Amino acid sequence: MCPQRLGLRGVVRTRLFCPSCRRAFTAELEGPREQRRWVPFCSERCRLLDLSRWLDEEYRIRTPLEPRAHPGTGCAEAGD
Image (tube, rainbow, N blue to C red; front, side, top):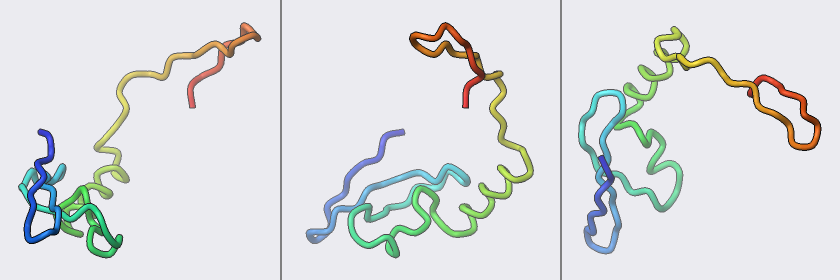
């Protein structure tokens, strides 16, 4: 779902959905990084849960990488 921009007293906030818990929350995307330290997650907890899923290999790239040809050489090499 696409973010919605909400104007609140001159501050532009964006409505987002946490990829971990799917909860809707608003975030100020402009400004100092300290104000948006967990974006796109709603909290540090959701950010750490997502990281642990990657480290436990719950998330995987299921399709094998296709070799790609290098222009001018005719040589194929596995993707990065």
